[in-house]
Length: 78
Image (cartoon, rainbow, N blue to C red; front, top):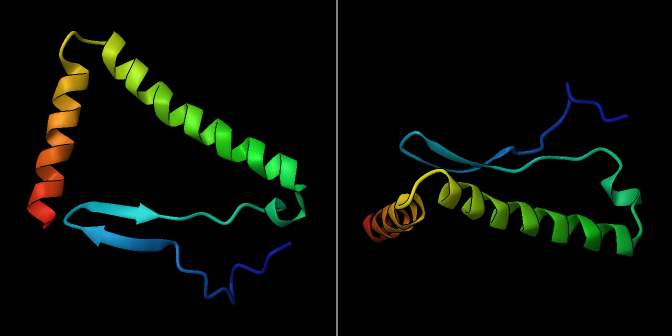
């Protein structure tokens, strides 16, 4: 088990205004086989695509609005 009290792991990778990019430590991930790690990767990619499907199903213009908002935010960061 990991000792969280004496841990120097950085969970917050980046921060912009009220948004944070976080990373997580997953117990036991290092013990997974390469095939299992690849499966985890593809499942996480499928979850990201599922987010677009959910946005699209909940409103006619939601996906367009989200993509436009993301372009605006990315433009403002430059």
